[in-house]
Image 1: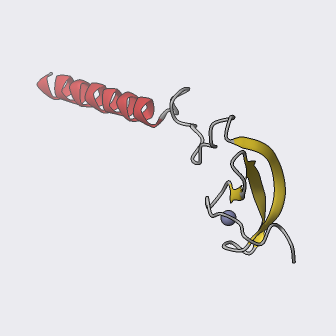
Image 2: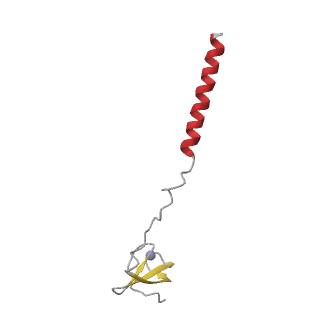
Image 3: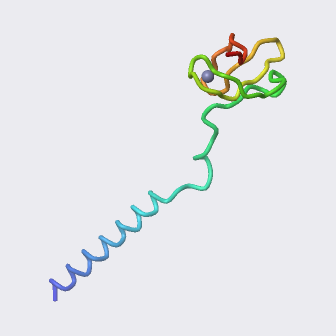
Amino acid sequence: MTVQIAVGICCLMASVAGVIAIARMWPHPSGQHRAPHPLLRPAEALDQFEAHCPAEDRPTLHIRLRLGGELCTECRNPDQAGGER
Ligand SMILES: [Zn+2]
């Protein structure tokens, strides 16, 4: 009798722990997918265009700044090459 109760409690504990583990692994619908590289404020960016990034040696998305100059949106490096090459 006591063995059966102990086994029952053990099964109950295991199932509760399993439910808690599943609930913790469940993806949360909000707050998990924010942009890793937030862009500048819209007032500072005039234009977006794809250009060659000298730091990453591949084409990336750049923005043209209102105050002049260009900025790579992925590594945030100012791009002096201006997309030439
Ligand atoms: Zn870059």
